[in-house]
Image (cartoon, rainbow, N blue to C red; front, side, top):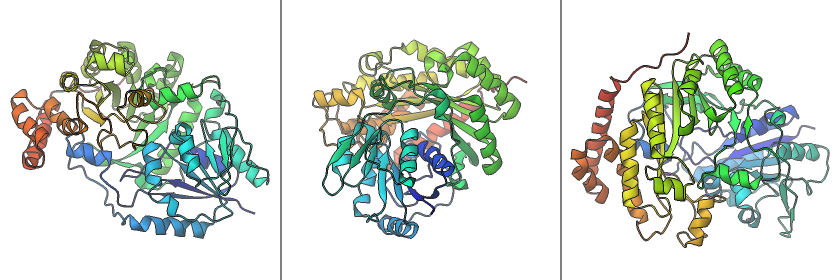
Length: 512
């Protein structure tokens, strides 16, 4: 008898999103012969997401050609999900969430009637760090914590063999009627050979999940996991929290097997006509040199499509840029976490032990070679002042990145900075995190949440327009409601100046 699994992703964005985990788990289910159904919440009306927020504040260029998207009323979500579950009648319902996803899930999933025979399992970063909250909801049979591949495989295998699911490592087993919880031991981390042993399955996703706006046109782009973990220990980051959570359980840092990368790359090029690749890897250029050299040779010989990577300013060297050029890609976009222009915030709050000079040198080198650049900034950190934020604005102006992604700090469960916020009374335990563009939830004496939100809105106007415009920008900062027309005018001017400056930028030249 065919076993059936129903994947649910409570997507908070208004754009199709392929999570890292679901294709992996779908690949495992496919390998084991399970029939599958996928449901996400993309096409139901929600509040403004981060992409839309960044476009309005001048972070993303407005006027991109966009897909025609028709969103259904949110009230349809519950009835449509219920019908899909009832029609498919799954043996297992599997959900993956990060913290904002979980909070959104709780706005509708309690109203869903899951068939009595269906085992409901939930996993993801939020479940790992807020397990008690998830367990207390009594909505799930199994909560998976930590790395999930082998846990998921064992759940499916045991279910098919009609064996007990109560004592699987890496899970909490919950009796939804009695409330009794069995907390099982943590599971050892996978070995490097095991991580990508099973090929991810992308057949659940249609073309819309791989179609993105880029430079005024729509392109086919694929997000590919090429590494896992990060060697650094930033206090606000989930990777640091996951590293500490898995201490003693095995390896946390992985560089994906080269053959696995190119096997997946070729499949998706053939199936989806992929034109560009966005690598999911926290610090690509921190990978072992032998791995990077082999990757560059094969990318040059077999793919030669544009690359988007993320790394750290410390990894930007002449040698590494030449290695990127050796990939033969028409261009490489390099994204670096800058976060703050204040060394006080970088060192004492974020645990990013780098000098601002290192950040400047990294972008100067990338700009010299004509690389496309992305810079990630964050404001609203604990202890941050208005003066600190303007140091970040000045740094944004100085490094002159092609793309600037600005976010508001969120004290995510599991992070060191969340504990700092709780210990210092800057955060109520029950306060739900917002999105990275939705506003600050901290209560700080030196700067209000409202001032942080206002500065977030005009951050790139301060950073990109001549300082002679500061009085006009400050008007928009202090009283946005009465200066919306001026604000929109300044955003348009920001892009006009950007276009003029781009004409003088050097081109990326790859190795033949």
